[in-house]
Amino acid sequence: MKDAFGSPQSLLLLGGTSEIGLAVARRLIARRVRTVWLAGRPSPALEAAADGLRVLGADVRTTGFDALDPAGHEEVIGKVFADGDIDLVLLAFGVLGDQAHDEGEPAAAVRVAQTNYTGAVSAGLICAAALQNQGHGSLVVLSSVAGERARRANFIYGSSKAGLDAFTQGLGDALYGTGVHVMVVRPGFVRTRMTAGRPDAPLATTPEAVATAVELGLRRGSETVWVPGSLRVVMSALRHLPRPLFRRLPL
Image (cartoon, rainbow, N blue to C red; front, side):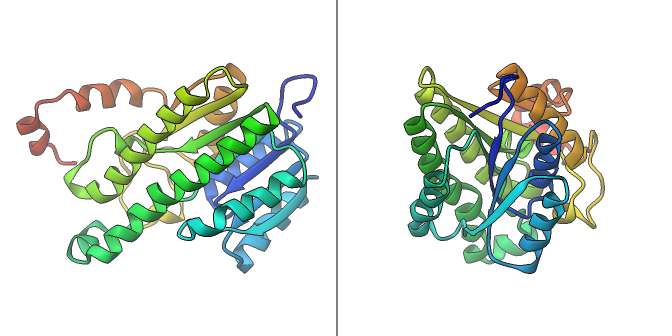
């Protein structure tokens, strides 16, 4: 349960090695989170992530989770919730893919879609039901500004995030009034391992900045969080730009 100050005390991070997810976990541990579940593919990286949070004073546990194995999601997530209430679920897994390669390899493109969208739909619905059953909690989903309008340079990734974003908004509407809070987070370009080697985009941000925005959004009970906040205006303009003009932009 949340403490007397309304802060979550337990966290399930789906995507246990996500740099953004771990930045959120570190920030919340500093704000009274005491139990953290890291769900991801078993690996030395997952165990190292757990050790890094333990030194901050949290009780950290790991569990196997694969976005590409929806058949196993209910069992994995069910075991976590059976161990005790979860105040916050952070869905932070996803892959960027390689647009140039994936256009010519449909199977690779499908893998991006299955990870970012299909896997998230499965995990999101299971977590939503578990949160609803316990009568409280928040589900935070990391989307992307890339989902606001598909760009030529990354429309495979962008389309998967567009689907995820629409799904999350609909899920939030479905759960309104149940005691479960759903929040979608739309970061711009985030400097992480996933984007290493790619040139910085305008308004590029960091995992720590996203973590700060997530915490503030939770405190405010926000339904949508942009990181940085100025992207809301930028993407609104781009979303309504006529298509012939949009094609000419160096995006």
